[in-house]
Length: 464
Length: 102
Image 1: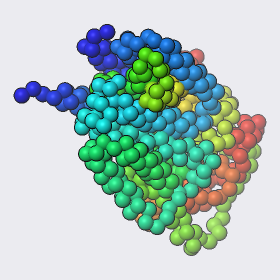
Image 2: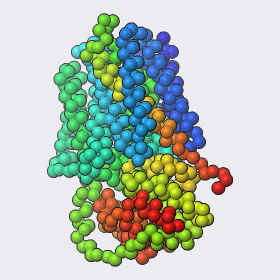
Image 3: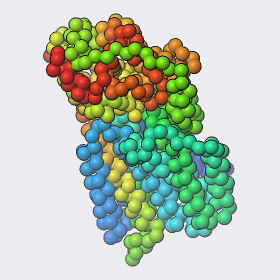
Image 4: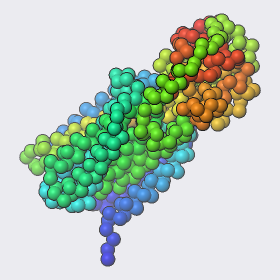
């Protein structure tokens, strides 16, 4: 296949990837978008086979490994529970990162295969691109592994900080630049390996100080990194499909990180520098006397809701942990049968990744036109009778609007307290991930329901 | 003076960032999770590099020090491609509108 033809076909697959993202602008077109993505991928892979044109026995191995990896991926995709989506995405990011590192290593060892020169005398531009691709890929890999471990609960979600952390990170970043410079002038393979090793280290170091509540930002950020790594390799291979895709994914992740940061009213840098929830906690717990809390049972909750004419559900990460989405849908079905209007309010950072709650509700067969974003529904709380908060906490805290001293001051929150009554399902009065007390617990119109989210929801349904 | 082909690639890159910027802003927030899984799947197009790397061995030896890395990268990227697209498909199939009869 001629180089020009394959370049055009790579461009076609890049355009198909753009259409795949474009399809996600509404749920109706999204399935078609995914199909475009798949076609784009098939084109890219076939063109690569045809342009290499080497159908020797190596080709059989390529197919074998492709099918091997593919079946693992397909198996995971069918078996994974929707609640584990954040872990899955973090895990997948790490694979892209590592694949980028491997391709860069291969190109460094055998540059002739990629028309980049000969070992020891690789074209300068290619070497820089290769180094960037490998470094960003390695950072994506180790960062995603840490994010995965934290989300999976294997590693504590608490931020790990130590003295001089930022200086150490800055030092390492500077040394990366220095290493790249020396790598270009000496072409030494030792330097190349050191560069990769240090990049693994920095990925690890930048993610460990970031706490559980900031996970949505971290996942989006790693999404972005995996894109830039792909773009770096795309420049090395002079491949348009990779460059376009890398740029798309890179900007997509960056936008999601921005949206998540805005949802928490935090600057990107303060998230990256980490340590949220670790230090504020101690200062906040000092001058706290026992305040009275009203608590109730499923019967009380059922009574309140039965007499309501409109109910707004506020789901959060706790719902995912308790796997309560199906029980919740059943409760809502019963409410609807009684002629009660029900809608769902979703905060941008509810859950552990962007859009996490929407997927869970969709899984439980909740129609997506009953689910609303913060800005769409926030004014409705004042007119609603009951707000049912299930597994959310910090995103409902009125302190964010009233107390300038609070670490979450200024964060957009759902105006849950404006409802006539608030039902708050929670296991205990313990603070949420931001490590601060929720004023909502002590409001007059709040009824705390201390129980497991799933069990409580089922009990309410029985009592309705 | 002729323009370096690198400049063309850089132009594609920069313009794609802008395309990505506008396309992603138009994605509805309720589909942000599928957006992440699909971007994850398409970024595995890095497999084209892995294929070139793995077929780089000379006629006699398939497994050279450089092609082994290619094969490893193929496995990783393939997990991602199949896993990413299928899980996205699975998620998107769940998004349904309200039934008319209600």
